[in-house]
Image (cartoon, rainbow, N blue to C red; front, top):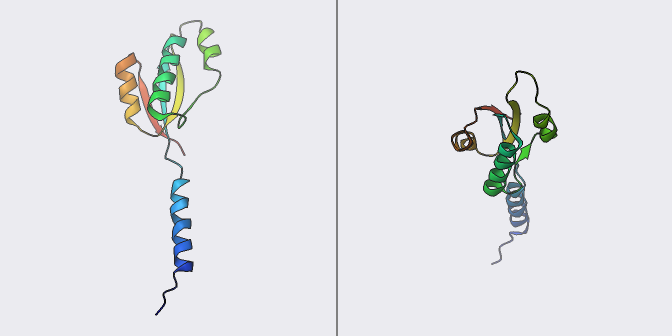
Length: 103
């Protein structure tokens, strides 16, 4: 008696490998940031928690360095895999946060 599992085993490994490449759902979180020091601190925090699995708005340093007039903060977005990052950063750095699901 022999059992052939060649086709089933190959399809199983293909389906498992597709799970490894499934992208995480990213959450867009907006923070009102008033200084480059806070911006760099939030970036370090994201890198510590998520490694390279996050994104941030580009050219923020230029915008924060050039704040003038009545505006005291600038809205900056971060794409992270966990919504709880917003509350953690809000408490730790005293910034306001708004969460939007990235589509």
